Length: 315
Image (cartoon, rainbow, N blue to C red):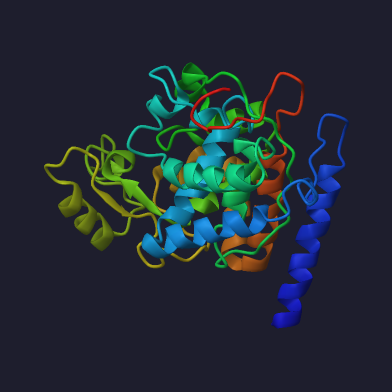
């Protein structure tokens, strides 16, 4: 088993290097800060592990933070910017995306030893890649610049939503250079962390003209979720995977996840992939890492970016 895991890590390192060499625009490398900030990995890892010891859910939150940053304005740290017109105040992010304080603490420590060297966008990507030993590690590619503007409307309209049909979600992934396989495998991240009632209440009542509750939802689980969410404001939370809340595997709760397997669009485009990952955890992890590297390889590397001193404001 140990030898198999070592081979898996080697494959992931090769994938990272091969993707890092694609095209002139992608100048990211795994050793970008080895000379200019050699303690970067240690600092990020210490903060991420400390945050997860305090609250295991934070690992999933940091992974989600990276995803939401990359889907708007590319992977440029724009989600971290404060201001009423910022991305963090877009509807999909309110009471949902979190982990900003962890990134702030990492940035403060890095600035004390490597001032104006490491971008906030890279810190987000590295925190997502180092968040846990529960999923395979991969070489996180670095060298991004921080964006100068946020894009709240892009966050409101461009991010995939758990209520949307699978074909629309696939189109939104396509718009940022990701394919149907990436849709399925990155949805695997929904197996960790927690979700608000507002994100799955559509499965608990008035589901369709013929079913009050989504018939694909386990009946006992539906009963417990109805009890949890009854009479609340939608912000009550439950584990996205009640059977293994802190374990990275191939299960999930949101209707978009179920749609990958049971909706008409899902059956046409994604059902075979879901079945493959359900049967073969090795293939799931392999493809998950490939998709994470692809997603993170949409960087802002040109002269229009900067290295922010404070992740919440431009210099």
